[in-house]
Amino acid sequence: MILCVDIGNTNIKCALGEADNYITASFATLEMNEPSDFDGFIANCFGSDVWGKLKGAALASVVPERCRVITQLLHEKSVPIKRLRPSTCGVDFSRYQSALGEDRAVCAFAAANKYPSPALPLVVIDFGTATTINVVDENKVFLGGAIAAGIQTGINALASRTAQLPPVQLNQQPKLIAGNTTEALVSGAIMGAVCLAQGYVRLLEAELGKEPLIIITGGAAPKVLPFLDDLAKHEPTLLMDGLFMLYSHLN
Image (cartoon, rainbow, N blue to C red; front, side, top):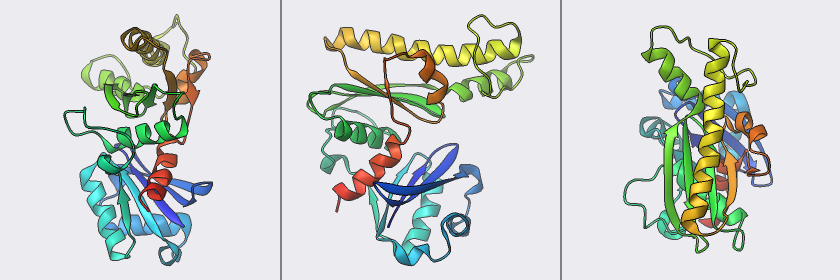
């Protein structure tokens, strides 16, 4: 069995099993403070005897301090760890001039392997705590992309920085013409994300001179998917699938 761990800003998601058959569980990132926290989480979700059954683990993290906690426990349990190494993953990341989030890199790696040429070029739009856009060309070169506030993150920012806008959860369908402030916040956040995706893709097509394949993923993707018609393929488990691919690729 393989343990795959996606350490995000909001949640830590784990998958246990093999690439074609795994079970998942998640844990609030802010609650993961000590190795014992992760040990207890794994025991509660997957059983206390799981450590002896693991062949290894694959990790992607955008939260270094939580990653240190988890890797410490994995080392204590003698579990080999695989992480994406850009030089050996089959996607060329050399054009990106600064540190690239592992979540973006793994999603790009997974998409390029799930949809090889002639499907390329492709765009992965990940609607998470941040909304990230990642472009891979037909030669499997990662060209870069864009980062914007996530849908819920944007709403939370407005609530914290304004006197009268309330905190709102995305538990209702947006109305294009909202009839109250709560509906207006939901509409602005979700329809704004839809327009971001549509507008970026339209501009990208003009720049690339060809129509890319669009893949959307992330926890908030189901909120925007109904408004994107046939523009995009929905891959809800893209990052986790990528971690299983990564482990296989590096072995």
